[in-house]
Length: 395
Image 1: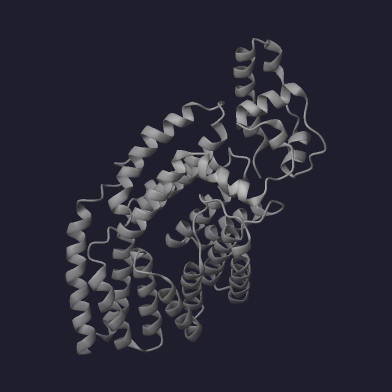
Image 2: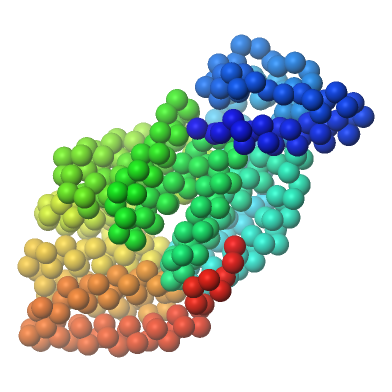
């Protein structure tokens, strides 16, 4: 839940600003009770607040009181507003596309510069009409920086970015902002081997979504993260249930408006997460089906996603004893991944090579391992120019 104390901090600052603007010192003493805030947050709006409270809320949130406390906007109108509210969202789309195609190593430094020069400047203007948008944009872009940092090998820096993003998200009334960050935090915790933490973060994100307007894409992603973490912990039944919930949520996504800043999560992404979950549960035929489906749905513009999907498919084939088929998938991946600036791909390839080494007496496997060694050497040289030592990049 969006913390009442954080709301009071920003409301008080806005009250002092409005008092100065209107030359009315009494406005600075205006307050909102916890019970009133909780009613608003739960959607229990029986009437418009008093004039002084409305004046301050309008200044803080950048919307007239009749919009803030009136009926929800039609879907098309909300979509139009989302496209025009913030220039940072256009930048977000640009960074997201570049990251997908090139990898975080190529894009991370540019995003950090953008955060420091453009987003930080917007945050300085808190209390203006763009205040709440500034926190949302800071949360979304800082969360993206976290993933790019992880993708370029800066693990501890990535954690710092995501914690900052969560703090920004919790300063926004829209609970989906913080839930979106917690989905990424859950995923990163799982990548780091902290499955217990990953489960709790996914549960926390799902808890934030209760009682608010549905965002099935985000709910599906959180259920998928929970499924993977539960599978890692050995809770097969619960993992399957979470996977079923993820599928049910995503099936409803086409009929519901999704803010364009929510991290994308489509059928290909769910198939990829399902393949990893089922592989962890050793349900190999189903894992193979999902891994193939993920690749069928993911086009070449999503180079890193396809690469990770190919690695999952290769691991599934090895688990089923189809080692030469796994080599064929790996050889195809090696042709396309050499220039992809992603430490994550390098790590996953190294892990896949370890899985192949017990079969190195086979000539096709030995040839694939030799190619993997050569590509790994090439990628180390490439990524050395794109990454920096831990801690050398600050937020």
